Each structure stands twice: as C-alpha cells, then as structure tokens.
Amino acid sequence: MGNVLIYGEHAGGNIPKATAVAVGAAQQIAAASGGDTILALLGNDLGGVKDAAAQLGATKVVCVESADLEHETADIRTLTMKAVAEATGSDTVVFAATTAGKDIAPRLAAAAEAAIASDVTAVNDDGTFVRPMYAGNVFATVKLESDFKVVSVRTTAFEPVEGAAASASEDLSLSIEKPGNAVEFVKLDATVSDRPVLTEAERVVAGGRGLKSGENFTTVLEPLVDALGAAMGASRAAVDAGYVPNDLQVGQTGKVIAPTLYIGVGISGAIQHLAGMKDSKVIVAINKDADAPIFSVADFGLVADLFEAVPELTEKVKALA
Amino acid sequence: MKILVTAKRVPDPETKIKVNADGTGIEEAGIKWVVNPFDEIAIEQALRIKEAQGEAEVVIVSVGSSDSQEQLRTGLAMGADRAILVSADNPDPTVVSRILEKIVEKESADLVILGKQAIDDDSNEVGQMLAQRLGWPQATFISELEIADGGGSATCVREIDGGLETLSFPLPAVITADLRLNEPRYASLPGIMKARKKPMEEIDAASLGIELGRSVTIVSVEPPPERAAGRVVKNVDELIAALQGEAKVL
Ligand SMILES: Cc1cc2nc3c(=O)[nH]c(=O)nc-3n(C[C@H](O)[C@H](O)[C@H](O)COP(=O)(O)OP(=O)(O)OC[C@H]3O[C@@H](n4cnc5c(N)ncnc54)[C@H](O)[C@@H]3O)c2cc1C
Image 1 (spheres, rainbow over the protein chains, first blue to last red):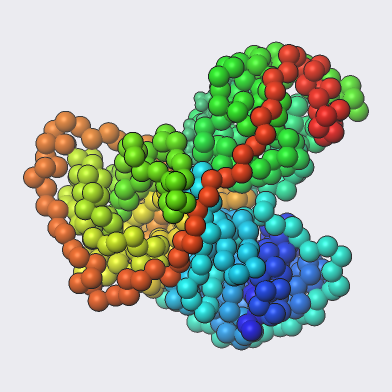
Image 2 (cartoon, rainbow over the protein chains, first blue to last red):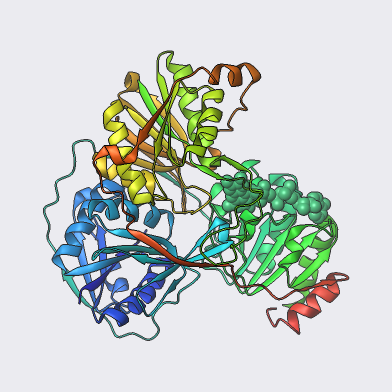
C-alpha cells in the first residue's frame, strides 16, 4: 500500500504544533493502509528545521530545498508536493487545516485529480473521513473515490505522536520549473505577540463587540489574558470593528480552537463563533444579556457587566498566584 | 477587462440547520436561500473594479439547480452585467471547478473572484482547484486587492494565520475573498428593475464534455455531539470557586 505524505509547515526555524498534529492524523491513516508516514519539508536553506522535523514521529523526513521555495506560495509548492508524493510512493497527502494547508491542499488535489476532504475531524477504520459542514451543525462521513487522496485535518481533532524515535532524514533533489506567471511574495506583516499561540494555548480569553473599543481590549481584557497566561481571541465583530488584528478571529471562517479553558467576554455566541470554540473543554461566558446564545454552550455563565466583572476577576485570579 | 464571479445558493447564515430524519442531508423546509456571503463580497469587489476602471464586464456564474436563478438575479441587481447558470445535479467542489474552468475559457475572463468558502459545505476548495486547472496564479483569503498595470497585474493582501501577507502576480488570476475585503452593497430598487432585463444564459453541464461524477461521496450526516448544559454562577467568587473546584482549570 502507498505511503502517507505530510506537508510540513515551518516559520522562523520552528515547526508549529499544527504539523505535529498532522503527523498524528497521518499515522492513523497509515495504520489502516500499512504504509509509512513521510514528512515533507519544503524551503530554502532548511537548517535546524530538519532536526526539529525528525522528532515528530514520521517514519521519514524528506527535505526539498530551492530558492523558489523561500515563501509559501501555492503554485510552486503544489508542483513540488506532487513530485514529492510521486518520488516517495505516497498515495495520500495530509495537510493541517491552517491557512497554508487550505491554500495548497485543494490546488494539489486538482493537480493530481485527487479527491479531497477538508478540515477532517476523524479518520475511520474503513477509510472514510468525518468533516464538519454548515458551521459545525452537521458532521458528514465522506468517502474519497480516487486512488490518490488529499486531506486537510482540523488541528483540534488530532494529537501529536508521543515519545517517537527520531526519524531518518533524506534530501530530495527535484527540478521543478517555476511557472512564468508565478505569484511573488511581497511581504508579511506578522502579528508579534509574547502570548501563547491562539491555536495551541491551554487557555484563551476572547473578546467581542461588547468590549466597545480596541482601547478596552488593552485596558480591560488584556490584564485578564495575562493574569491567566492565556492567548487572546476575538469575535468577527471585534475584528471587523478594528479593535484587534484579523488573526485573532475565532469561528467558522477564522481559527478553530479547543483550549482547556475558554472565556468569552462580551461575545453573543453566534453560530459562526461557536463553530470555532465549541470543543473547548471548559467554556465560561461573561455577558450582560442573560439570553445571549453563548450561555447555551457555557459550562459557567456569569450574567454581568464585563467592565465590572472582568477587572474583579483579574484581581482575584492574580491573588491566587 | 472581463471579471467572472461566482454566486452559490446557500441557506441564510442565520438559519438554524438541522440534519434530516433519514440522515442523508439537511432539513430544507423553511430555509431562506441567499447568495453565499463570501460570494456577495466577490461580486462587490468585481463591481468596484469595474467602477474604478471605467470599462469592464462583470459576469456572474452559478452552478447548481435552476433555483439558483434567484441568486443570479440578486447579483445582477447589485450591478453585474450578465449571468450564467450551469445546471448540474449535486456537484462536488471538484466538479464545480471543472465546470468553471470551461466557463472561464469560453468567456476568456481576465480575473475570477470567488468567495473563499461556501457556508454550506464549508469546503474552501473551488478557487484553488480552478486556479490549478487554469494554470493561473491564486491569492486566497484576501482582504485587499489592487489592480495595476491597466489590468495586467494585481497585488493582494491575504489574511493568514500569522498576520497579513502581501502577494503580487500577473493577470489572469483567481482570487478568493475573505470577509473584510469589502462590505457588499444592497441591490437598489432600480437595480432590481434593471436586473430583470439583463441576460441570463443557461448551460447544461452535460454539454461541457467533462467528468461530472462526484469524487467525494457523502456516506451519511449526523448532528454534532450535544454539550451538557452548564449553569449560571451568581458572581465572580462563585465563578472562581467553580473553575478551581469542579472544573479544576485554575
Ligand atoms: C459568513 C459569515 C461568517 C462569519 N464568521 C464568523 C467567525 O468566524 N467568527 C465570529 O466570531 N463571527 C463570525 N461571523 C459573525 C457572527 O455571525 C456574529 O455577527 C459575530 O460573531 C458577533 O460578534 P460579537 O458576539 O462580538 O458581537 P454581538 O453579536 O454584537 O454581541 C456582543 C455581545 O456583547 C454583550 N455586551 C455588550 N456590552 C456588554 C457589557 N458591558 N458587559 C457584558 N456584555 C456586554 C452583548 O450582550 C452581546 O451579547 C460570521 C458571519 C457570517 C455571515
């Protein structure tokens, strides 16, 4: 049977948890097919990332280095991943359902005439996959009707491989011609934060339109975020209003998170928001409207004015430390 | 410049979606159908390009049942010039991308703008697949778009996990719209009147000479697991006690 290839993300010399989780999902798929798991690393001068990649539990790490792979543009990476799949005898390619994975995976599926399942939440023994639809109101079991398959996996639904032995590493030299109309990377305005990564954090405090301004995010919400050592998230309304940057958006069309503790502050709990945080272990909602839909998924709801409750909570959390 | 945009017919985002009794799909009774919100943003962007360029044609395409005429009329009422309905029975994203490839070729479009995902199946696939089939550059999840060189190239800002990424590329290209690209206009009354007279072509997908079989079969659908009901706490002290005691997360 064929091998399972994983698309390895990396930035600034680090591999995100999303990729470690994708390896975990790939292992489940490979267990059914009997193939190996192969982690593909694409980049220009991979350096120390190769060693980090070898710790994730894949059978093998395959590295492709080229100046054309400096940035994560979908056109050249699709061609490269297709060639790596062929060279490694892989018949399934797994991506994490991150923005990078969602950008490249469908393009690869089209290039390989492969069937694709996006945002997969479970791998079944019979080779079918489970994926959410309608903002998580429906979970579909789908069968991919092609020999070569592409999947992207929801990172909150799988676990990294624990205690794996170091993988063998191999350099693969491919001659992929960059298309004449290739996309050019111009710049990345990266969000810099000392806080935990939103999608990896154990605790998340998310703010909504109820915060009323970006300034209130800073003065009212952030002290609680930091007292808890949490990551900060937001509703779409808060992002749209410009209170916080786009990459904090949690939901159907933002990030999907499942921390141990999620605290939603001044968020009504629209279905599109719930789609991104409903799988959190413990959900707390602070909202002055007792009828806000967020209370229907909250383990603990506090009906209160956030401008009073949040500073009080912050002080009392600090006092615990 | 010719801009092709898509308009998928989907349930209104406010609709409470339920799995139907036999677990094969959703309960369709009582659903209000709208243009996929992300497609509305795509249409709006095409109209803005047309307004900025002076000369451009905006062609709006929907793939699906004949009911999608309603969504195409909405796009025409917003200001699109003409519409194409490709009738196809229950196509999956792969099939839709094959159909759109044919339409783009037939129309010799310079730019295709789609919503980044449709809020029914949430696949987020068609734009990327289409770009690959056409061999065109793609920019997904965009929040800003600038057309340069008199329609020869474009620069886009993309909303990605780590922040905002800027890309530039030559046209023709495929781009997919994210929420913050623009705020779509409402159709005006004169717009709605005019839309009635705008051309709507109907094409049978079977006439396009492509594989129409789904590559993804939906075996069954289920509702999500229910969360156990929680409780309301009286004050901050009770909340902290609950998080420390019952929940053990503090
Ligand atoms: C296609 C589409 C995709 C979408 N994707 C997403 C997504 O990914 N993520 C997302 O979050 N949304 C998404 N949305 C938007 C979603 O439908 C809601 O509009 C949004 O989540 C609302 O944000 P909010 O809860 O912050 O604001 P609101 O709904 O306005 O709620 C604000 C809440 O704050 C409370 N409040 C106000 N003042 C106070 C106070 N002083 N103290 C305590 N509480 C207070 C109010 O009672 C209210 O419940 C999407 C919508 C569409 C159509």
